[in-house]
Amino acid sequence: MADFNISVKYTRFLRYEKIPFDIPTHTHPYCEIVYYTSGTGYGCIEGTKYRYTPNSYVFIPTGTEHSEYAETVSAHYLIGLMCNKDAPTIPAGFHEDDSNGLLPDLFGKIQEELRKSLPYYETCIDALAKQILIYIARRFAVENEKASSKIDMAINFMNSHFDQEIDLHELAKSTYYSYDYFRHLFAKFKGTSPQRYLLNLRLEHATRQLEQTGLPLSSIAQGVGYHSAAAFSIDFKKKYGKTPSEYRASYTPNQQNLQYKERHEEE
Image (cartoon, rainbow, N blue to C red; front, side, top):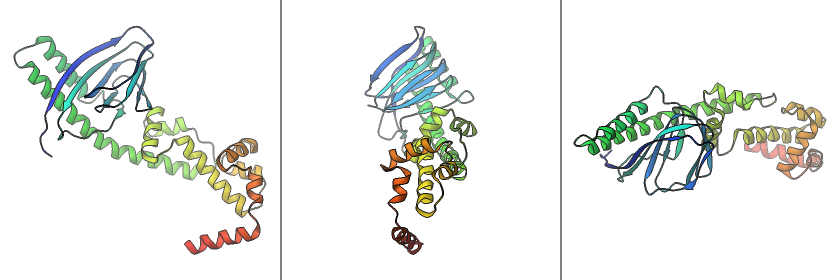
């Protein structure tokens, strides 16, 4: 990769004392990195909501719509950067705990350079900001591979246990991600939310039971993880536009045989 240049447009340490504090949706003609040292709240990047906690950080590419809402007294480092075309490509996104990483030290050094304002301090700040950008790019590459593996594990668990009660918050804990970040990663890799994936999985299994068996609706509902046939029927009609009984009635024996034959030929 070719070397790249950056220019720091601004760097600040901000503290939100007046709570709640709301920053409306806006954009910047440069990329922005935010590192939260304390407090909790929410950020929204291009319509995706993230929860921030101490030691989490956010990368916001040039021109990306974002907003922020602080629900407790919060403090964070903020840096705006102009980068040339050879800079690492980092997608917009929220990243969790970096308390054991380099960001606290690097941002602290930037503030120290600002405070002392010794000769060439601006050059030092640009160099430190470049380190931050490289560090985040490397972490993203590692996190992306790790996150994909964890989401695949969650998918496998749902595929194997869809007929049982699944607490998605507990499933998120098993991946060592917060629930909000788990939902974000799930949507990123699978194109849907974990709730929607589980719902579709259960209903798809239910359609096969309706097509191929004469089991009572209550048994089918229970067999795909529902506690009540009523809730099952409501979700089923929302997805397929028919009640389970209507769906089953639309499958005559001839249609069922044709369906089976087509599946068998595909195999």
